[in-house]
Length: 212
Image (cartoon, rainbow, N blue to C red; front, side, top):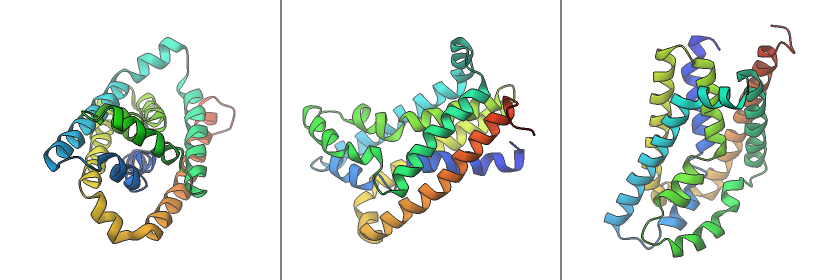
């Protein structure tokens, strides 16, 4: 991946995979009923946990792939396919994470003291799609400290954006409305589908299945 495209590609991919705007109904459902101070603590803790998980996979992702005997090209193809399915769910208007909303709300009743780890940090903020994307980018950036630093910074910034969305989720929902959020989700799905196909193509080129 060319350096000039690295930062925007990483940002948009991670932002679309986390999809904080699409998760607004989930945020409202899970955080409903908590007093403001406790809600603030939950949001901050879930954000910190998500950042810690992402940094772990950025730093140790290459070692994990090597331990499992998985090449970066192979993982690019697998990650691209996973991201493509996520994109299709967005385009169809039925993201898999939103399908978990009722389950997560019921689970939250049993975890009323702390829902920051489950289900907020995992799987909503830092789910399989986000981890797959981080592993793809980290495997491509290995040996380049600057790129790895940029990846860590961009990933952290995406979670900060998600935290801001959680803080103002109710107001954002009123401002955009259900239609606005739906349209945004479809557009995000369309762009993510194109990015996922590009990842698959890059992976096939890396494995020399396709010519450069």
